[in-house]
Image (tube, rainbow, N blue to C red; front, side, top):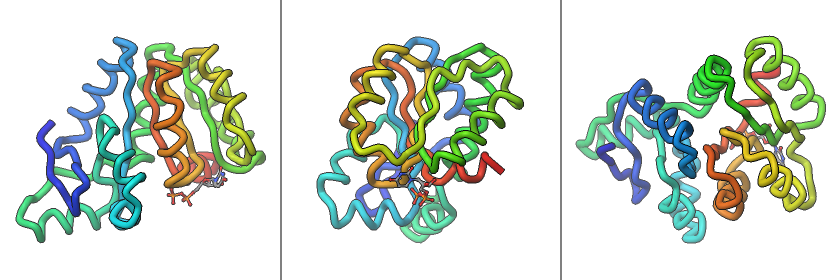
Length: 192
Ligand code: UDP
């Protein structure tokens, strides 16, 4: 996809539809894929943290999540096509995964919330295989990473907030050739 840089963060500039098609093809081919849906907070944070900036640069796709990014790009004379939010992408991939019988691993949010997310997902997406659902209040990610490595899910969604979720993905993505995406507070929304 064409890219537009906003304060040194390289965003993809495309439509949600084209983006999803590309991601779905990569998942089908078991290509290791790391998506960051970045809002202005993330961009500002990366400015002051070169390690996080490096993590962003190593992601496969950074999408503009938040109208502030589109406004910033427009001010810089580089208008972007549309927002691609983490929440919309999550819902679209769960729906597609349900149609295709894909497997998914969910990590994040409080224990009560992830329990509700499991129920909501089972009810709305019955053909989706939820091979793991863990809350986001662990001390050590290693055992969760081992479980992911063993189960090899098509998609891993991490909802533990930035910058932690991107840091974990950067550290562990090599253990599963699927999709890895940080989804921030999306599980709280999804749980109702
Ligand atoms: N969270 C978590 N583990 C932590 C800290 C936070 O699972 O150690 C969860 C929290 O319960 C919430 C999400 O991460 O569901 C963070 O949401 P927020 O909207 O703050 O994330 P952001 O959009 O800022 O990345």
